[in-house]
Image (tube, rainbow, N blue to C red):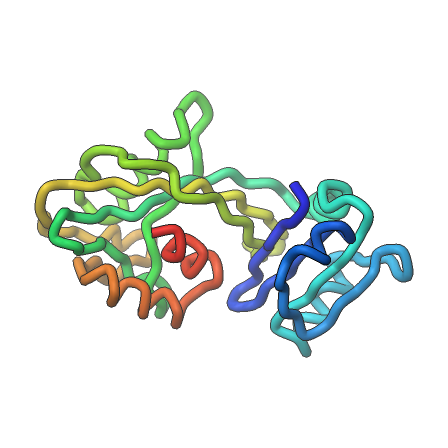
Amino acid sequence: MTHYTISYARKELHLVSRRALEELDLQADVQLDEAEEEFTRAKILTFFETYNTILIVGEQADELFARFASEYQLVTAAGGVVTTPAGQALMIFRNGRWDLPKGRWEVGESLRRSAAREIEEETGVEPGRLVRRLCDTWHIYNLYGQWELKHTFWYLFEREQCAPPAPQQEEGITECSWCSIQEARRRAEESFPTLRAVMREL
């Protein structure tokens, strides 16, 4: 790959090759060059205290990403968007923000099966037929003192009609609701960058 986007809360880090930088229209609050200074997790987190968007340029984006990822525990997850032919989408409300159902991939499970399982566990709704894979996202977070880098694979499902949802409260989900796709996009704009990326693919 020539470009990686990693989210941290509502902030974003871009790792880009020099060649791709000329082709991509990326806006950032600060730009760093790996040839001029070493970047570490501590340095990136310090920059995030001041800036919302950081761009790091190097010869190869894959090499930049490998160095970045070496400081994190890698986690694989899957999730999805459930829609109806009437143009409705299923969302969850967790930890004070609208989100989409997702969770950790289990060994021996296909990613799309993992996405369907997580949707049903977190919302109580059977997701229906698989339409297509949407995209994948990366984000970092600190869980009980352990920094993790989560790679989430997103899928689009469709069912014939809405079904009454049941939020998985033990996972911090206080509400599940069906809304128009337009409303889902609006909610995504007020939530995490990863969510906005998924909704753009719709």
